[in-house]
Length: 216
Image (cartoon, rainbow, N blue to C red; front, side, top):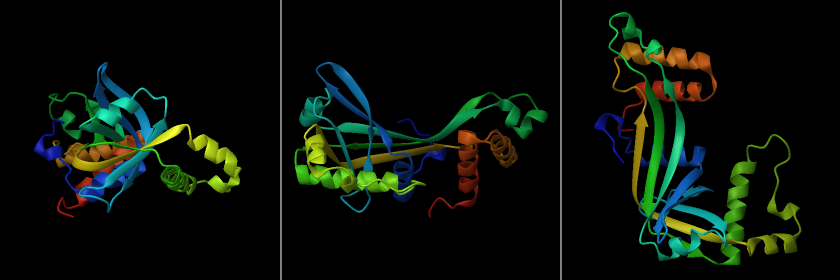
């Protein structure tokens, strides 16, 4: 990934947090048919392996399964908050007109050798972890695997296969107006806050980077 030094994010905890907050990753492999990519929800186990371990599952009939089985490496891309940045948000636009539009975004890319897991107990444990993570924010009664009949769950598990990817290499890129003067960063934060939604999330990240030493 192309990462100018000013946008590089090497803190492993920050990278892991983006994965946890935005777990739907793009799983990319290469096979006889060329490149193959699928959106897959992942869990990151931060204390396992050198840089953590990614775990997920896909349908058994997914065309990516044989590619994962044969792969010497795969890539998973996670995308965090992102939005368009209009030149009108820059305070320095009032001084001169030498400004252009851009896009602010945060992303993590992780590489590793995938391993397929065809073990009912592993799959049940994985699906349980995945369910607990996402049901924990439920405003109603959280759903549990045990809410469904055991034989039904056992049957459903036969249709999926697990994926485990020990992370061998991981990169983070936070393009969050670090290359702009401080006054532009402040005006971008204020402008994005008024837009709400994803733009407000980007504003929060810009602000956080302003107040967080990079060695933390």
